[in-house]
Amino acid sequence: MRDLAHRYYTAAVLPFEESGRIDEAAYRKLIRYFLQERFREVGGIIANPEAGEIYYLTREEKRRVVEIAVDEAGGKMTVFAGVFDLTTEGCVECARDAKAAGADGLFLLPPAGCIDLVGAWNAEKYPEYWLDQIRVIDAAVNLPIIAHPVAGSSNPQWGLGIPGPAAKLICEAVPNIIGWKMIYNYEGQRKMWKVLRALPRPVSILAAGGGLFHEFLAHDMLDGTASGSWNYALEPMLDHIEAWRACDVVKARRVWVEGGLRDLHEFIYSDYSRLHVRYKIAAWLRGLIPSCRTRPPMPQAKPEEVETLRRLLATAAA
Image 1 (tube, rainbow, N blue to C red):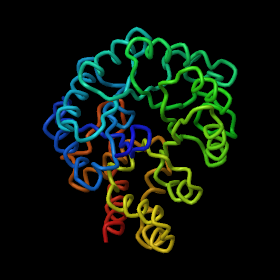
Image 2 (image 1 turned 30 degrees about the horizontal axis):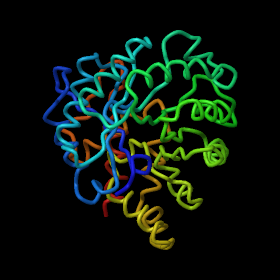
Image 3 (image 1 turned 90 degrees about the vertical axis):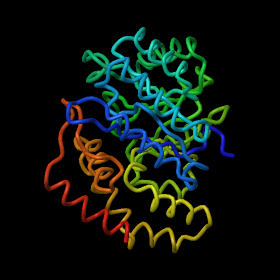
Image 4 (image 1 turned 120 degrees about the vertical axis):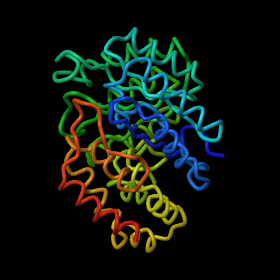
């Protein structure tokens, strides 16, 4: 049995009805898809991640999403719950709601709102902007934590992620952090591998963008995942990971290159302003959700994206 820190967590998308309400029946169906035996043994669910449009949900909706995920998982699969609110007090309430609903852990996103925290935050110089909030949430609920360390402004060597020195400080200060999501550029990820491996206690390296899983596996640096890629490519991704785990590099490359998994991921991640809507389009094209509708101000699908993803998914499923 895999422990909480070494599972393949999927950042699950959230389907909406035409009215704009959460499509609870469709969400239940999606969670049941992730509960298939092959994934259930190694996977986990993140309810209310960025891919689930957490920023645009009310407190009641966030609580309901976790309740549904926990109910459907029924103890068969681990459920972590995203935590976000514009105030620290609101984050604590969200975390308490998640614990009361039965979540196994929390998926924490950094503070947002004013330019200080979004566009101008120097995470290396002022790590306390997020660390202080994490400590308050942790004290309130005492659950395992997966960190989603996106920084508003970072050194180019790290890309989107919080720089290594700040990550080290946060992990050392909060023992409940069990996993760190790898949202860095390629060079930043190589640096973060060393930072996390050098910590005095284990903090799992959780791969994020599916397009870099091949490199993670080649370097034996994929402890688990926290990724929206599972919404659209679960079966070939498992084939790819299992081949690497079995040291069958020939099969892994066949799935990755000839099988089209690399090209599918590369298109999904080629434009970060379209990332989460593309997760949804691809999940819809696979028949996993009834529509790719998002909640405004999230962008809507474009016809050219739909056609490109239809073609790439057909190749990856062949």
